[in-house]
Length: 376
Ligand code: SF4
Image 1 (spheres, rainbow, N blue to C red):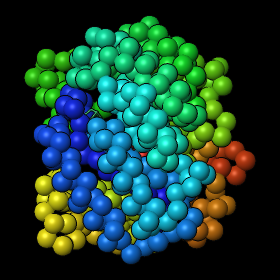
Image 2: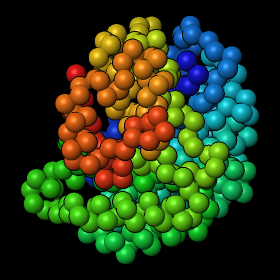
Image 3: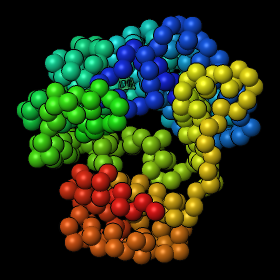
Image 4: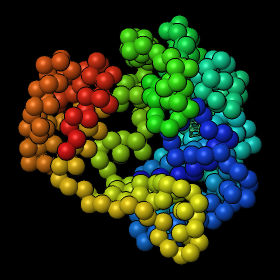
């Protein structure tokens, strides 16, 4: 276990498309009570690691907490789990409307060395449509403040295939993001998650999703634009400058172990997986009573582990190293569910080269759908 994830389930407001475990923060008191529970959970953890490689504060909107609260949680990780040195990739997700130069300087000083900024769009109409509580101007200011505060590793998130978004508007967004010169960019195609405002509106015919053709055009345009600007495409939705791939996410995608703390946080260790109560109130109550906040535990079957290795491996642009896979699982990846592999091949989604098997661009675009067929 070389990675730690901390979940902060609060936001300023719920965005229309959001399917994450998050809800609007009711009060400062609620944040304080949640932090106390989180600190208890970390203190109770018996697993130690002197070689922590990544720590990631995600959400929700972690930057909604005060710098003091965030620092205290990070210190608790250092004291109870393992040292978080300069070479440990320590990320915090931030919403542009919740940070300023002072807060960012405090976070940098506390030990956070990577910032993931949820910009999503520079288009004011689209920001409004998504229900984001920040402006494009605040995103630009947050980026500049982060640089001034000493962040040398900044990632931006953008969303495409939004209702009403044109290819030109998407290109303009990409250009604006690139002008800032971030080290990492995540580009997500909008998905309609269950029980979100966007899905409700879609079902009621009040919102028209982008066509599949337009979504594909936007994805291809993004890959070309990012490539020309020197960003390596290394996972379906992720692009990075040299040496700035997200080490935390690479650990997930490569099937590594990690510990998660906070409401709904997942952990994975030696073929076992467990997750905490999703509901922050239940999570808090369990810890206040001195009970475990774990809601679900399972030991993964061999089939589940192979499925994850294939699903996550094929989402990486480099694909799966056949020899390594064979050594670990005792069979070539293409020997597991050969019918599904055949279907991928017949639809021209596969490339085999240099001892690796991977999806081509068309396959990456449809990866969520076509890889689900591997599920045991
Ligand atoms: S800020 Fe992020 S986590 Fe919070 S509601 Fe919006 S999309 Fe969801």
